[in-house]
Image (cartoon, rainbow, N blue to C red; front, side):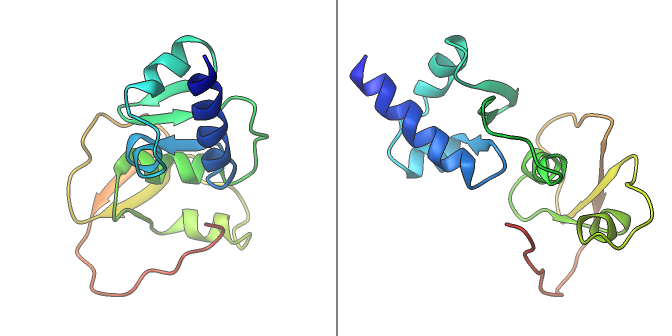
Length: 131
């Protein structure tokens, strides 16, 4: 049980820096075995959002959560594209219904209705805002 508490604390600390979300890869790099995530989810310490993506339910929500989730669902190398960038920066008049995420490859899994993936090849550097 002591290892479970330690793992839960490590996962929560990671989640606090990532809008409540953690990936299997992130926790493995932090020393938490990937097999522990489904166990923590079964005990209510995590919500399984998608394949290898979890959310810590007691991390306070922010206005950036849905952007973070969209990017994490699409996977490594994904970036916001178009209107969602304006919304993220507070420059748009309204929040877009769908978050456009660009990447140079297909997403691994079926995406929810609020995420629109665009395949795009870009050599332009991306800028990281709000983590």
